[in-house]
Length: 206
Image 1 (cartoon, helix red, strand yellow):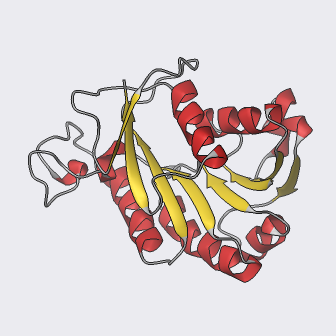
Image 2 (cartoon, rainbow, N blue to C red; image 1 turned 180 degrees about the vertical axis):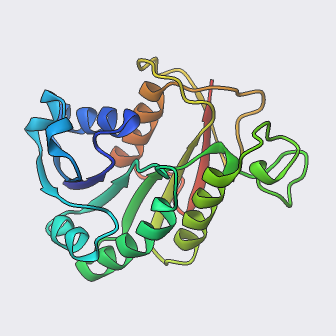
């Protein structure tokens, strides 16, 4: 198996990449700033480029079997602008499986099930820009016809892997209020090894 990794130098993406490399999985990443890569990531191959460049995505994805994206919004609309390009490149290359890191804001609200959490009284955030961009990306994935899963962590502090956490399809586990970057990566990697929660969002929390 060969992964096409996006966001490999980020807090969660780096940990997913490390797990894949340790497991002997080939990783090819699209990296905007290769000089920022930690030494562990030198064990993978990469294409220098930008996720908003259609040709650079198409070049990087060649020969890969699955896409894993830990991209963030980067304070703008990076997710919603890049995901259609990624989907198109996957279809061109014949790749069907994509796992992305989202946010708990795009899970369903328990108190107002017709709303997403960021739209409901469950959300404590006053600013919704990032959640709105994740929502747009989610809508693209829903309509793409591919085999997708969005891992949706709540408050995400840096932290190691414990392997002890709760997950729930389409909802945040009841009472969950945080999950470490290490455990988010651990769960995401488990989906690479064993496909589950296809065409679904998955909430993750302690």
